[in-house]
Image 1 (cartoon, rainbow, N blue to C red):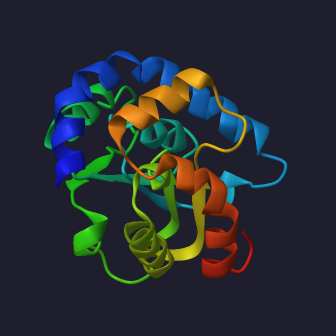
Image 2 (image 1 turned 45 degrees about the vertical axis):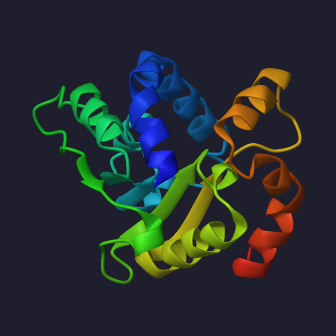
Length: 184
């Protein structure tokens, strides 16, 4: 897959921002705590986990985490960055996989299926596969963290260079999610 080649090449750059990303995800989880209590759940899969920053932030909330990514180099960095730091802390499991091929998990394998900053880079038909697979593996809910209308010019430039469906995604995501999920 073209994108996994790209992300294998830029994985080390992403790795430089790991601590900043973990801090950002902690802030996001803190901001939504009154609306979504993550402590009610025990397990989650992060689809497109990259260097594992979201996995780490969710693990800190007590979730048994599985991170999935098609890019081998991203997963190698994720395994290194998320090594256990506390004796009773569960290890994060990292799995190489691609949503286009179907997720290598049984139906309802996780309480939560989550993806962050992944959907915007996928073409519409692939996004539909992502949505379907997330619904299939989640017992309770699917969560999307991604760009919206409030983004920086630098983000626009970087996403244009990556060549995904970012600009169409921004225009269509609300409709897509409402058509594919009960409460979007």
